[in-house]
Image 1: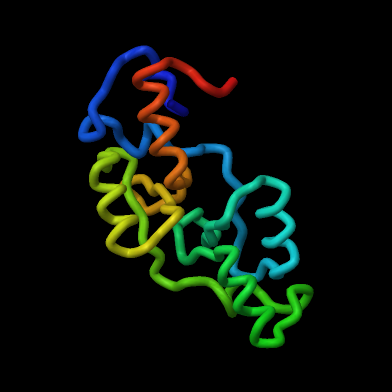
Image 2: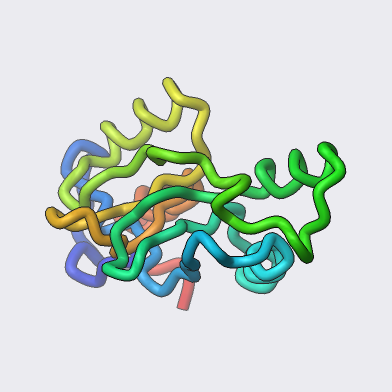
Length: 147
């Protein structure tokens, strides 16, 4: 798992938490970021979503690959469209203590692939994707799979 504190310990999904699974080194941008910048970051980092934060790193939105593709379909130019124009407002998120089971249920019910992880103050601290949950489960059974 991404959180080293669980390595080697077989844990049921109910005990694996977002803090164990989340990617901590994630790109994030402010609402004035251009679509082209966001698209480039997604491709370079192989991630499908970019959290949007304010000056205090409070989560205020999220831009996904679909948001960018939909902007293109509406005739927008990624060189001029800003995150504020295309981001999902009031994004869904989890806290670092949210269990993997809760995350799976939320992702399933809302058809989500990515969920930002915030601390108690609402500041962005990570991002979790569905594949992170599978990786966490496998690593809890088999040990580290990635270096």
